View: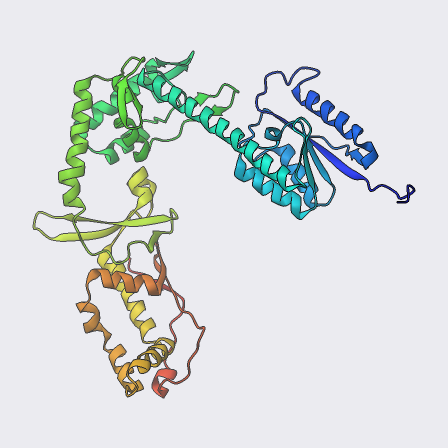
Length: 458
């Protein structure tokens, strides 16, 4: 062997990590200690051509159970760019505590010819035994992490069962002081008012409107880091959560079960029972009546263009027994009808306009040609004129279809129905992948329906 053969330089990147921020403010911290030990090891391999790259890949105060680490991302990026030959760490779990994440990184290393070395455990991934041992040790690291998580969950559950406040968004009516809930008198008065008014009127929609008129908002609070979260207008979603939260009668909830809490209640049991009784009536008796099965073929495709949200079917029955169907803007339901210019549309008018456009689409040359070609596969003797006659006489067949079948056909042929103050904008699905030209002359010269249609009815 020629001793004058130049030794290939191996660029060594040192990665350091510490899970907690404690001690990182020190002049010489854990990350520095890891780096110093790794640099010493690289120096001991100088005769093999090992050199330390100048970049520092450090992650302080970040768990090894996540890949969302700035230092690690820079390291992986440099590996993909071909700037690193060896990754050096103090211990394996500094790189990752998750076996799946570690396996992905090892695959990345191998694709780019990068070696992984743990200086305190003397492992090298260039050997099969090294890879096996690494996986075994990392499995124990992951097991340790899972056991720690289980202990944390058990401790959290035990604390909740004792009625302790375990953090999260502070609820309206309380402030968090020394990790305990303390009543905020101003907000508590609003909470009592909400419960009392709902018990009186029994309507969340009307109550939301009242609260908006009075200028009430959800809780404004400041995090420990000084970040301010401003309150927002109270909507029905927030209102339902508040009215169904046992916290306000002094209970702590964990996984659906309630336990006596350490905090003081804001409302009494009698008022709580009245409100829950109203909810029970709404969801069982009144809810069943208002949500009775009625045709709604445009459900899922009709939207309020003003609010950019879906519209949902609804209906009401007058004293004379006549049923009136509507499609109502979800934003109007959630935030009050005064917030939406459209509010609702008569279901019959909207459905008639859409069905008329679908009829025109079905009678178009493309649809007739495709239908004829498909039917002919099963009925070779069928004539094109028979298909034309059948499609032109679609109305009696359409009226005989079940509402569910009508809705399914509309969903296939109509992409969206946008409702605005001007009327309906209907966007039909009109594909032309196979423009057959075998239709009769009178069909070929028919006017092709456009993809977008505007219908005014106001």
